[in-house]
Length: 213
Image 1: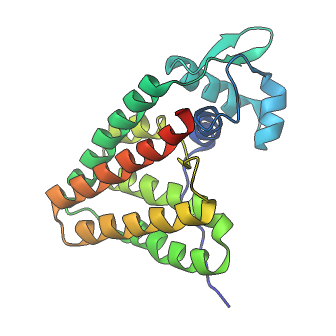
Image 2: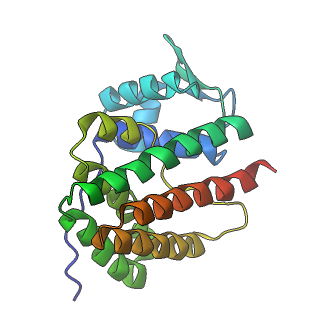
Image 3: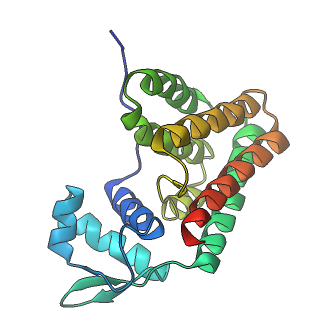
């Protein structure tokens, strides 16, 4: 019997923003689509307050326009905004890995995600997205830099599934890259960890861009 312990996930506000950003990037939500506050909260299974806060995050990013009466309206993504988004994420997340190495921060939370993800991929792969999120989140936490943590959390967008990739293929590829990143962190190889994470995020960008060809 598997002994899978809970993993640490982002706060509800960031998770709501992430789910909506992922849907906009993946074109599940389309430009011009109306997002009523209460209906969106019900769809996400959360209260209205974190969704209202998530709307504010996405409005700052230019993904939605706030509407007093209708909640929000999707503005959408294009190739340039996707590149801008992922290139910023790549630099910040790579820098986070560098800080973890240079500060010799505890890797306990990160290692927990890695070992649990290995088991999940064998037993229940559809749970992998939580471990994907938790792996990244624990790296940000390990930097002990609150401003960096808050900034990257508000950029998180969940799975970057390409047009020609199955979920199973994506999960396997993502976890293999996480293993490579963790190996660099274990060896306190700051430059190697930086490069491995940077490649990971840019690969995600290239995957999602296949939806915009």
